[in-house]
Image (cartoon, rainbow, N blue to C red; front, top):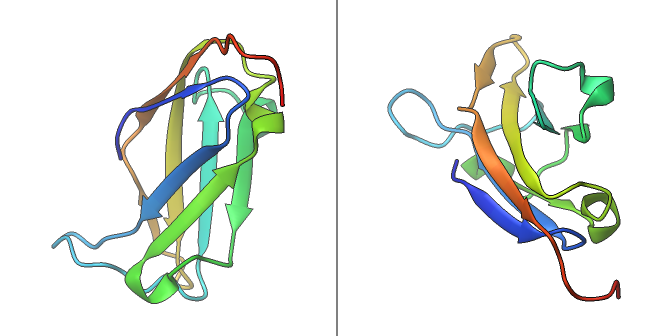
Length: 113
């Protein structure tokens, strides 16, 4: 994952790619991906700025899902740094966490559209 930057009130696109320890894509068909974005990941999921689970994916056989968080959601976030993390849970249930990374929200100087 990489640091993301966007203006408040803009759509946020997060590309999630699940790979095994050798770096090969994992077929995520039948699994679940969870995405959490928060000022501090130690808070509960219910208190996070964004938390959702997905079982339908963009390209499951190649381990890829692109999640779109709409502008109406990001508009409510105050400018600053947020942490985000994804978790993949397969049918075993084997859990694989991606590294925590940063989403930087900047003040949007344009009017809402």
